[in-house]
Image (cartoon, rainbow, N blue to C red; front, side):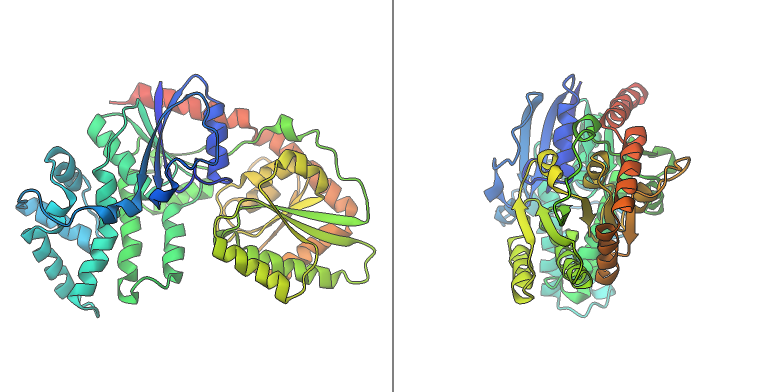
Length: 474
């Protein structure tokens, strides 16, 4: 069996999160040949892999969105749109319920180039219609170039090479969802979608805060990503999420309930279960296994740690914060370091990339302050090593800490609202001061992982899904 994994902005270019999961996933299935179809932002990252690819990765197809800007701005042949194509493409321009097959046919079967579409008279007239009918408070030139910048990367990935495979499997909607949908449409092979977080909602949050977007065009950008998810949900044979609430969100966004299923993350329990607890040395060491990125809200983590130190002044226990992970956003990293410098915060250690299994021996408990998550592996790894966790109430973190369904094991940590530095600081203080609670919660977390969240359980479910989807494919 050959599976094409479609990856956007993750493996093998960055470490942590979905990338770590993907690397372990491929290693766990040596019986399967994997093709990687990787979408990156900038072609300067070509071949700059952060992982040594496993032997069962047989090929890598790389696509970079910034290369769309290098497409020649001239037509190769005249494109005349028929009435149906005009109606559907107008829906694309208004970001309504659009039939993506229309674009696939024009660019793939009919072999028109990107500029043949963008610069053809019919498409230009559609843009003028939409701009006038929408009563937008932007000039037509602003509208034209915004729409062009929105569509160029989409059209570029559609025009790319489609690798041969028995199954196509993407780890998000977005651009990866579009080309997964293209692959199943073109090659008549099943497409599977796995969402670790809800991509559409994450992009919406980013766009609402983005300063580079024209305010009048912000909703167009947001609706475009909703169109991406509609396409992926429609074309996918199966859609998985990491926890039940995410399945409900997928259905609210338009996915058919019969396609959805839960396959939880799992960790290598055997690697973590025998890590010794840290010996008492007068310090309480808090670990954050995170990438340095805005979505992880490292700034709130630092401020909360500062508050916790203030609360614990005069205590016999001293505290340290170890931030373990790669730098995704260098500018954001510098801002974090500036906060530490300006507030004279001591005992914050940026370790860079570490061997988490080895480093866990230095840690008493862990913390995760993300503003968005799916089902974080770092929390499960912390539990497997008998370390409780303080988390923000995002994704399924509360379910991991408190249990769900027939899980009555008890509490394995403390869950607080995102971006709430006072409550985060108080939660840290509680675990720093109460040794017995910390140890009991750690034992609960370890039992929960052993029963529900091992790597073996998760991988078997994915392998079974592959067999099921192939068997039932039309």
